[in-house]
Image (cartoon, rainbow, N blue to C red):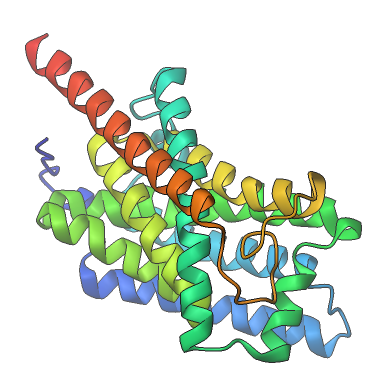
Length: 274
């Protein structure tokens, strides 16, 4: 799939250098806002993260859209897909959730989180904070982060760089934006899929929905369904998951990626032939 930029070059924004500036704006404002709220005595994690991500993302996105001479509406209206794409990305998310959870268990053995970070991750999945967790993880974070990292950064890279760069670098930046080594691995791996999905489909709505569903899976397992799967539904343990569960995750992930690729190729072939 070939992406051509406009005559003024605005579609090629941001460059790699500019994307790091956007990342600094996004991360810097989050840290500053979190610090201000902490000084004010507001320490509820979901609330502070929602405000910080929302404001930090708004400023970074507004700055980028001015450079690109685009609107959020124009990004969201691009290449809407049928529900079949959402179904196969949902299958991919289930497989990725299982596989990446096991990878997280390996990372925690190499880099133990400690009590402080365990308490932070546990606080995100408390039943009494379900509404706040849903707002943050399923609405605000997917909307803000997909607009910034896929709709703006991946989109710009697709016009100005090679396909590998347009997929890998935005995923790397998204991983870095989480500011800790444990979420970095999951975000980078999922970001590769999301950046590839956007590059091939140009559907920001599909990326937002996929991101939201991936985050929803953790809330469903830990808070709503309260399932008991060692290594998957525990937020403070580094125990491993059952082998059957890992194999199920690998199978679902491979099928989901294959089905996504097949559907995108068929759509591309249809467009080329029309």
